[in-house]
Image (tube, rainbow, N blue to C red; front, top):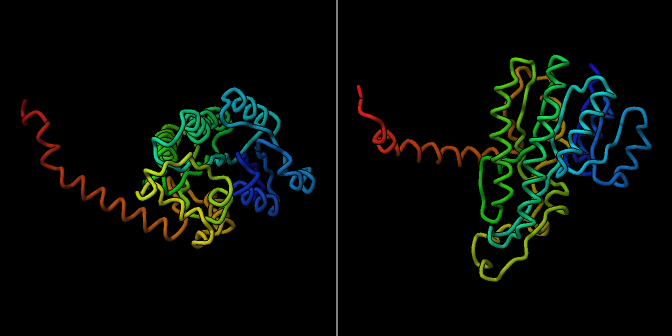
Length: 280
């Protein structure tokens, strides 16, 4: 098996942690970013030669560029970049504060954009590589109480889909991973909730509270299996543009897309009515 070097953001928990542990176990090299190295002391101690930790705050563009530059310079080549860092924010749109809105967009959308932009010149220079953006099936499907999270995921998916077409001729493959609900800290620990107001209590906007309570049933997704499928995707050529992980996620995505297509098809005459008449 070919040894690869991976750069992964957000490796202290969730998919980032699972990916890192599996890659190190099979003998690959990993550069992992965290905001606090105390959370990955065990990885640093157990893998001093194959794991390198970088402290990185995804809301600081200059820091992102510096870490990417340093990593490529020190390693010489990075085969796979996984943009994984991010978090969920729940609550009705008007319940969110300006600070919460700005921080989530900076972390989930603007930060990954800067990360990918910083890596592209190096990937071109080395003759190719793979970029994997961890999104969510919430990048295709929208639920109440998740507006800003959806905004960040729909935004990064549009960015990656466009950039994938720009860089394919350089041997750079890009994949958007859309996991469904998984038993990670994302849902049962790191998820942030706005200051909720009673006016929304009996509306769909607060239905997410049931999902966040483990007593109502755990998410069906296995983070270890999902991480394994992500790793395996690097060997697929050409790079799959999208990967949906989880049967419930796929069912929900297909149902949403079918309805969306039907809605568009119903607008055929409306759309055509705004064109200049033939020949003009």
